[in-house]
Length: 166
Image 1 (cartoon, helix red, strand yellow):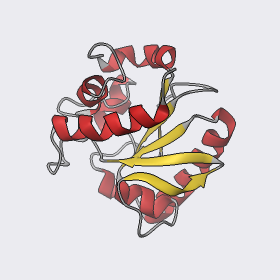
Image 2: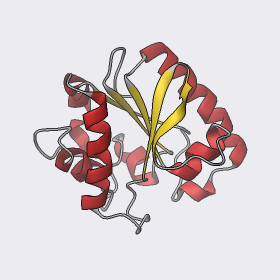
Image 3: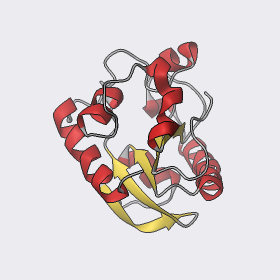
Image 4: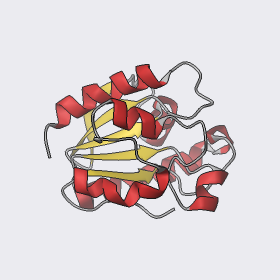
């Protein structure tokens, strides 16, 4: 999956890894039922609901997307801890190059493993990755039934407010 973004973003969103559907389409968070795009819109990051095929318009709003791990799987729990740690190193390098205002990792368990932060919780983190502030958000996958689009949007909106205008 190609990264979307570049230097100077407000927020670089990092999914855990692409779904098989996303890998097939070439679009991040493309699987039907994934709540990323609705949450992004309802939180006020985008003026309208974007289709995953419109991911390339995100940098115009100061937003980007990447993944902790590049390998596509049916479920994120198919990834090994070693893959998450190696992916975290690659993500840290990207964050250091692009220097977004915030790195938003979508999935607390993946964040804990990838960055050796076993006690991390949702929200802003006390530590930085490659000098970049980190915000952990819930995983928007439809498999994460603990969150609705509305609760995801509320969590995203807190980050939007912290990241400020573009």
